Image (cartoon, rainbow, N blue to C red; front, side, top):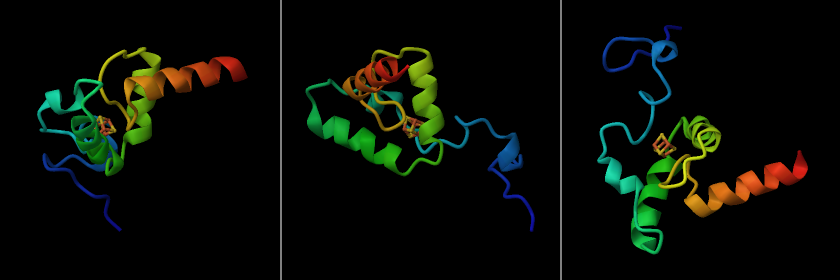
Length: 90
Ligand code: SF4
């Protein structure tokens, strides 16, 4: 079986996680809705739900302490909750 090849001819293994993201090529502002904008937040989360690199994206955001935006299918509030939970269990 041949490895799958990306749009630019590189194998999946050679692609960065950002290259494999469901949001690649989308307007970045989609992922920075106003926290009170439920429709905008749901729209961004729907893209993340279909993303193959969701976990990697979330860990990236957590490691950088990204305070704004939707990352890895998690809102700002979700990420604060995850970090709090991890601190407690450490
Ligand atoms: S999880 Fe969401 S924000 Fe992260 S790379 Fe995938 S689509 Fe983009």
